[in-house]
Length: 186
Image (tube, rainbow, N blue to C red):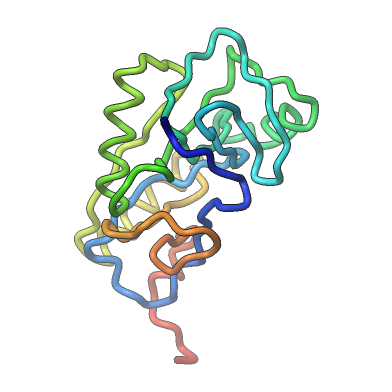
């Protein structure tokens, strides 16, 4: 049985430290939706509000750290859905990016999550791909491409990062190209 998790134990990223080399980090698009936790039995917002899922949504038993997502401009529709407990099964879905109850570092948890979501046949859950970062230029090119397509930015994760409550340095948000340049005040 999967261990029950609380929204209070969710892991959160920090801003990418200016000028740091992202080589070896795992890159993934940062989706602009509303953060939620599937605890293995129910969906809960990052603020603790329980959310009723559409009856047609099949969910895995594995807890998932997710984003309720309705496209690049859908963040307000997602917030409204959480506020009024009305998730639209036709235009919203979950972006799953971590499996907090799975053992091991991030890459191991991600692999387990990907396999579980696929086996559970959950078409409303998307597990976005990971890209291993080669260097700063690689991160800059992926960020530019993501922003050009209307994305919010990138999340960079240490492949060995354990799931830890709170803000952690091994999980970083990269939203602006200037974050990849050295800090002039350093």
